Amino acid sequence: MRRIEIVCSGNICRSPIGEVVLRAKLAEAGIDDVQVTSSGTGGWHAGEPMDPRAAAALRRRGYDGSTHRARQFRPGWFAERDLVLAMDSGHLAALSGSGEVQLFAEDDVPDPYYGDEADFDEVLAQIEKAADQWVGRLRG
Image 1 (cartoon, rainbow, N blue to C red):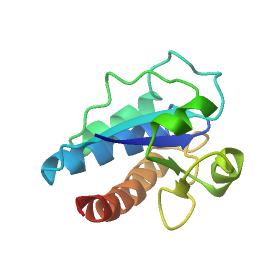
Image 2 (spheres, rainbow, N blue to C red; image 1 turned 90 degrees about the horizontal axis):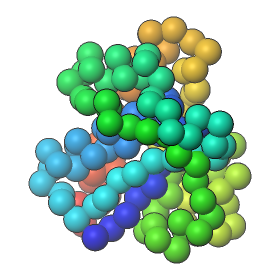
Image 3 (cartoon, rainbow, N blue to C red; image 1 turned 135 degrees about the vertical axis):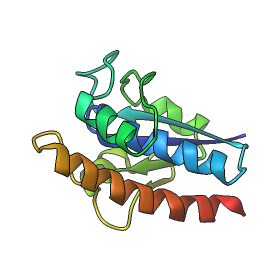
């Protein structure tokens, strides 16, 4: 089993969207040997569900993020993960040095937290595109 961790700041917007989308796209592709989880660099939202606007954006596109609960990334997890995917270059810098960390998308995924519904939809579209690329890479 390959293990992937997706990381953003508080684990209530970008990384849980990435987790839900990548997991769904891997299942669609018949790739069943990859476990996808997510977390945040900070722990201030630990135990909370994802932001309601993120959950709503997912629902509008047919995904279910209702079971998500935020948690903080622990450095010891590097040894347990095959790949850590950061949502932006700030997360990449915060996580670098201990294991394999790459950006989730070609460009930083912007934080929609202070935005509106349209910002969450744009982030979801960017994440879906990047997830499709990861499915192609993980297929091999």
